[in-house]
Image (cartoon, rainbow, N blue to C red; front, side, top):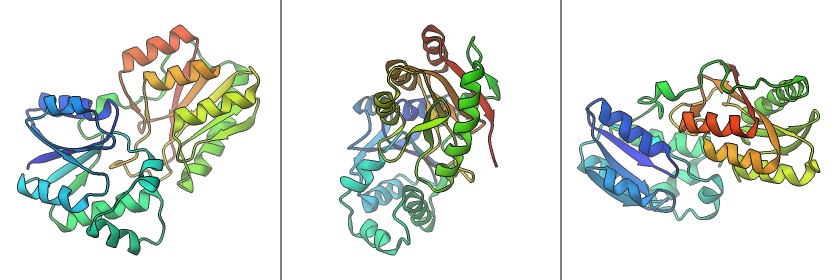
Amino acid sequence: MKYALIAGNGRFPFLVLEAARGQGITMTVAAIREEADAELQSQAESFHWIGLGELSKLIDILKSENVTHAVMAGQVKHAQIFSSLRPDWRLAKLLLMLPRKNTDSLIGAVAKVLADEGITLIDSTAFLKNFMAAPGLLTRRSPNEAERGDLDYGRGIARQIARMDVGQSVVICERACVAVEAMEGTDAAIARAASFANGRPLTVVKVAKPKQDMRFDVPVIGPATIRAMRAAGATALGIDAGRTLLIDREQLVREADDAGIAIEAAESEA
């Protein structure tokens, strides 16, 4: 088998490359020009830039490299997909056939096109199982009574919006939902929530979809999430165990402890 990494932004692609290398696997990298970090080029033996809408070029690259299995890692902003996408003929044809234009439908259809070309899209965390959140408390501090109530309330709402493929995160204040994540992403939703809270503490809940396709759009938190929470006055974070990827875990937990933020991973819905 020969592997490829289809890379978006953030640290996720670097972690995949490093973990694969530790298992003796080298990867061809197809980096999305509008999103990926140029530093990836120095980390890969075989590297190619592709535009966000260049599905034909992606397939040509993977086939020329004899790739049989591909991993998608790194964020591609949802707003970028729907506002900046300039599809080539193959992707334009695919878009016309989609019954819904949400991200799951689009990337799921791309996965089907890749499969038809003999390229299997695999679980994006396949090389990173040790980076997934285990059940329980991640930080020194446990959620207090008020935060516990907001976490329980927020999980119910978050699972509803995730089920509808709207977003994965909500921000709660005193058992009221003050922000729902949509295309802007978790950090932007947290920042927006701060404008409604008037200095009151916020609680953030991020969940996987009920039938989360682990090949793409896996929930991810990292130090940037903690910084966004700290700036907004958020004091607790609830995530799904087993289906949330922790980026730079030691730094993440250290910054949360320094900020007095409690992080708890709960068993997720199947």
